[in-house]
View (cartoon, rainbow, N blue to C red):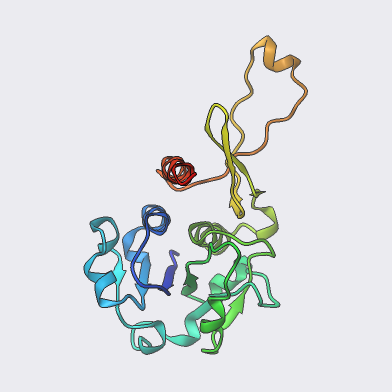
Length: 218
């Protein structure tokens, strides 16, 4: 049974990085199962069409009990003593995230939601981006995959150009390894390939753009 995923958007506006992560969520989960709450009127008015088809609300989750029963909500909280498990799907229909999770260094945005008294679960000790946290939650509660069976890559180095890389300070889902290259050269190589992270479409292009802008400051 498909679950519902709530992003309590905790800032004014929506920067490009955030937009890509949110679009990734909507494309994976389907707009009917994604809720963006606590949007400011301006943020709601400026919501791109790709996101506006999801459930978009200026109300916060606490005031939506008629549509989102609090006893059916699980807050994903790094400070929770309990890991998320497939069995949690039997109790909860809504999984709540405090956006944006992917701050570096992390800010305790979830702490604001923690005060509301929802049941909590954690996804491990390493900071994830918001779309990664949502995708991991979906795999656990819908795919019935235990958290410790999901392949992760921590702080991956992303190749931007031939001699340009950037290290991402987050945990990502690791993509399945590609089929082994049958060439003689690859057979001779003993260096194992590092797993690649599951990134939102367009993220590498945005990283290149941001990196170029940073270089222009010098």
